[in-house]
Image 1 (cartoon, rainbow, N blue to C red):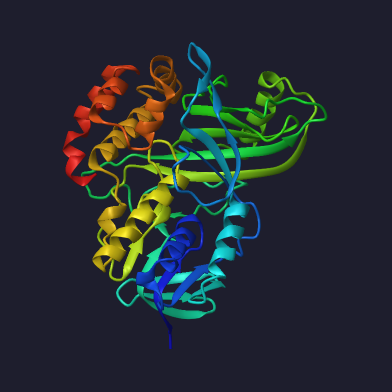
Image 2: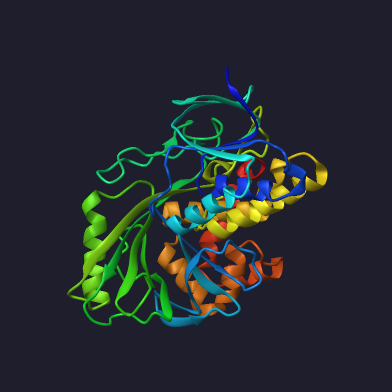
Amino acid sequence: MAQQYDLIFAGGGLSGLTLALECAGRPFFQGKKILVIDRDEKNRNDRTWCFWATGDEPLPPVVFKSWDKCLFYGDQIERVLDIAPYRYHMVRGLDFYAWAKSEMAKHPDIHRITANILEIEAVSGTVKTDLGDFQGQRVFNSAFTKIPVLPAANAEYPNPPFSISGNSAGPEHDFTRLLQHFKGWLIETPSPAFDPAIMTFMDYRLEQEGETRFVYVLPLTETRALVEFTVFSPSLCPAGVYDAALNRYIREFLKIETFRIEDSEFGVIPMTDYPFSPVPEGKVIHIGTAGGFVKASSGYAFKRTQRKLRAFADAWEQSGAPDPAVLRAPWRFRFYDSVMLRVLRNQSVGGKAFFSGLFRQLPPQLVFRFLDEESTFADDLRLLQAPPTWPFLKTALKQLPVLPYI
């Protein structure tokens, strides 16, 4: 006999914890039994989230470090970007999980268990785990991501979490699938080597190898920094490529010969224009990566997740029923992402040339507004004039038959 709950969150990561707390803190949900299930205790720093935000953006009190200025190295550009009124923020996964668990402890109606989720039955709302079955009136899934992305496994990533649902959403629709994969080292140097007031947003000085490759650097002190090597490509690199790139960057570009690796992280984010449906599957609504929360053309997710789920909970509380359509990005931004991904996949314009064109010709605040999906149509026209324009227009015309499906 399945244990009964009003709301079940299958997956207790960023999106599951965020929405569980959004619901628990509102009068409309008082008295509802809420269950959060995750296979992990969330007691280690398994990831780092970064984002830019203005001072009035409502965010969890978990920011670890912030910067007012960003370095950008690209094609014919080497510039310190003054990003005010934005600040660039870093959030450690461990800090977010600890905060979320302490907040959940204040709400007696929220229960959390650590278990392996084996299956979700959409019609009945039953979540089957190795600790038993649980049935909810609503199930929010962020544990299973059924998108057409197949990252080739390597030694550091032996079990890709993305399940396969075919090569396209329909027999005649070729949707774009790329991966953003990255490895970072938290390093310490014996003497001052960093300016903790300026982070490196993107450094494209490494060889691109027919892909989009860059490094970002988050200096925590004068002697400690997170150095992250990032690639946009259809599949993962051999494991040794990441270490070789980090070693080369630290020694050749940062001019650091002696350092100690305190910690490392490795991750993969799907970048796809696959049309995540806003229509619930039975009692299941997909959130997080499974719901298309990751910005398809950039991989940013933290602030985007906070905004989407806050708006979703607001609308649910006001109307009395959840509306998954609130979770979808505006159509024009989905189309822009689709065009951008196809341009990158076909290497019509590389990421280095694209972002270099933007930051050479436009203020960073405009670029950030665009990536945050807050730009006006007039802003979009300015952006279109910055990078090589023709490849994007040509690709956009080719994408017209796909418009109804994005």
